[in-house]
Length: 157
Image (cartoon, rainbow, N blue to C red; front, side):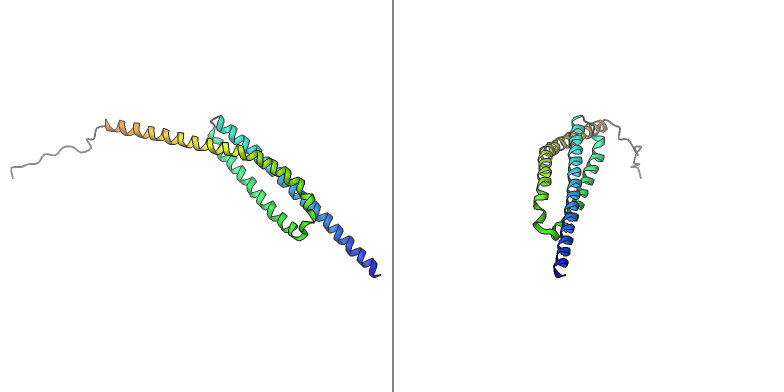
């Protein structure tokens, strides 16, 4: 009887490990999917800047931030599960981690280019604003400044 109970406990642990493994795979698949979405949004942002359509950048930046938030939530959920199972799932996780690493390596240069483009665009906008300000100030120099009617002082008193 003691032997049957031991087998039942082992089977229970085995089933728990299978369920935990499936759960980890599910989280990693979600994470991989979110990283792919992040990559596509980053590519769209770069294309938008190349096409000089800055009006859509705010929405794309917001979508990218949503992806980052989702990734953080997935990481927190996975951390709880992996801490409970320790190194048992290392082989299971490695394939997903390599795919995620490849996506991050693809995103990194695009993101660097995007940052350079945004900085350049920002400097261009600042330069244009400065030119507009100088033109406005110059045109105001020609404007009449006669706001008050002249007053004459009576010096006889």
